[in-house]
Image: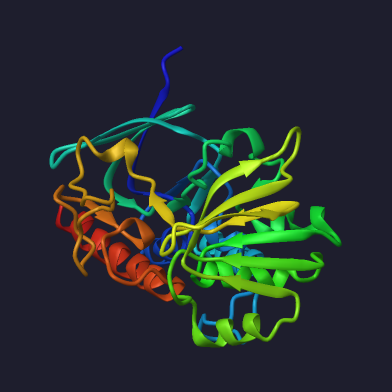
Length: 309
């Protein structure tokens, strides 16, 4: 059967911080706005156990912040369609066509706020132990390891921040980072280093995950001395970085070497009427506040573009 075509002012792809902020601003401007999200609304933000650096909240969970943003976007008039997967796109100066499982959309403007996904742990056994010892979401899987020994890999805020949650369950936590010092905020670092459950191993990487039906121990290499050691572990939570979700758009949108969309502070891409916001955009700092700022700018620029047409 032929899919129904729908025309509207603006489609926002991605319902994370940037996408939901853009939806609030666009719908308040009385622009017909649809947000498409093929996974959970909130993206990476939803997984955060505790957020302490977003203005207005001393402490708030990612899930609660997401629910507040989603409610606000809907109440201002934005439509949010969850789990309607995008199949193909055409993004040119003259036309924008987005085909999902259910519809063919022809918007006047598009905001790409697709965010990023966690980079998988680069060990040959990742697929074997994925979900059976190797994890990427502490709030999803941390409770499985009550009284166990966990390894957290990474040195940024995601890795260090996850330890706050995992400490509620694990008896012992080893933090492994390839650098010679952690990259997380000083406040987060201080909390972790004072935690008696935590041991920190620097200048090291995990090169193998070992075990039969479940993870039993890790093979670790010191990148300075090349010394190889083994560490018993019941589970691993990896936070070694993010990869932008831009595969679907690379035929039309200019990307940098890392796959991020090249767009300046005005969020304009190389295609007229297509804007980029949030972690998917090329920029130095990837924070909740910068994603929210991008969403605001992208929505205002999209409004200006739509009115000019």
